Length: 84
Image (cartoon, rainbow, N blue to C red; front, side):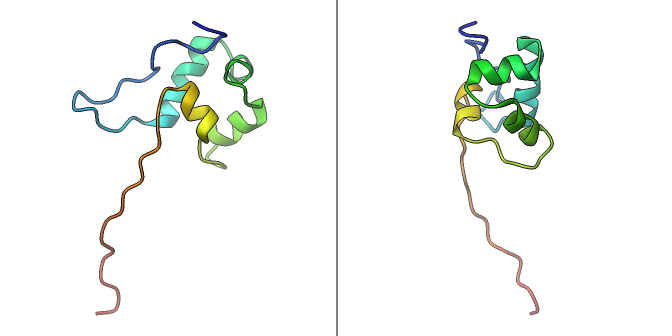
């Protein structure tokens, strides 16, 4: 563990390399660090920001994702036809 942030990814993607639940990964990392404040300090973010992410008030940003060894992937799908 370097600076309180696990060297290993805290959550494993599906065998196919599929998506990871970032909030579950964050919760696992916080448990491993001992507290949200300890994890936040090691990740270089404020405890308030971590709290906001955990409560769904904010999306995990680059610093949180980097500390979790995750990356954001955006995809688009067709919208259902409305009013037709």
